[in-house]
Each structure stands twice: as C-alpha cells, then as structure tokens.
Length: 240
Image (cartoon, rainbow, N blue to C red; front, side, top):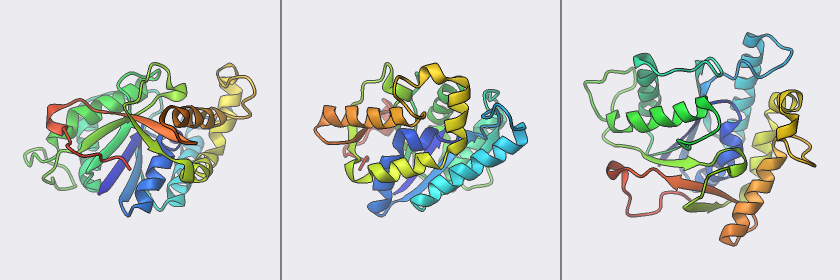
C-alpha cells in the first residue's frame, strides 16, 4: 500500500504515528510524510524564513530515517485557512502519493491548524477519483481510508485501534529527536505544558506510548480512530 501521514506542522507526525509508519515500512509499504505548514513561527529568535527552512529540513531528516519521502505544502504556521486553492493542493498531494491509507489529526484537537488539516483531508477524500477536478497529479481510482492519530497528551481521545510499536520505539525516538528546534521552542514558550519531570517536549510522547501500550497489553503502542464514513468502510484491518 501507499501510506500518507499528513500533519499540520513539522514534528506532528513523528510524535503521533512515527512508530506505526516505521512498522508500515518494515512490512514493505511505501510511506510519505507531509505537513500543511512550514512551521515558520517555531522560533523565539530566528527569522520566519530561516526557521521554516530549518524545520522542513528536520522533517526531511526524520522521514529519511524510515526511508519516507517528505512533502511540505508550505502554508504559514497558524495562518492556514481553507479556500479552493487549499483544497486543490491537498487533492494534488493525495493523488501524487496515490494514497491507500491516510493518517492525520483528529477532527477535535487543541490547534486550529490540526483541525483544519483533518477537515480538508476528510472533505477531499471522496474527490480523489474525480477527473473533472484537475490537478498536476492524475486522479486514481480509489477513495483513501482515513485513520486519526491522537492529539498531544491524548486529551479527549479514546482509541478504537492500537498499533504495537514496542520494536519501533527507538526509531520513533530517533525521528522525534531530529526536531531539535521544537525542543527549544517548547521550552521557550510552553514550559508549563511540558509536565513535571519532562526534559523536553517529546518526553510526553514516550509517556503516552507507554500508556497506550498498557491499555492493549504491550510495552508501547500508538492509538488511532478510524474515520466513520460510509465510503471508507473496510472489512479488514489496514493498520499494521
């Protein structure tokens, strides 16, 4: 299969489903990672164009750890809005990847970029095969299956599917570690949100993976919910 994981910002994917993506690759599937924005407000000191360049390179290196291709739609961080052009860009992305499965944000999240990324993916999924909607990448005869990964700290999210990432946890850690700029950004701006004892933003990711693992009887896991859409009902498990 072709797997597309799309987040709003560089680092969203790695912390939310990096282990699952690594497992997909091990099983022989092709993985693409993508972000809607370039993360250009993710520094307290650097100019916006410079931090955007850094963050896209961090995302590219993280994807390279598992042999995935990284794509950025290059919208401004926190100033990302829906219009016709945005829909076309998302349709083109999915068609370019020929995605069988899309992993993305939950529709209910703390961040508007996260929620909008999820909304557009859900809205355009049924448009992928329609030839009259023209994009650079050609239509293909499939409506992708969508699975939601959980928000930071899993607040308000009850998984219905779990992926055992015990064997992939070190790969997930390595992918997250490429996002060095975000460790500094979170310390500068959201220290209170990191939690007691967390050395950096991604420590909470390990705690969540342990918690989800406890729920499903393994050491580490990632939780998902399948999109509830009549067009995307699947009679088999598509998560690894």
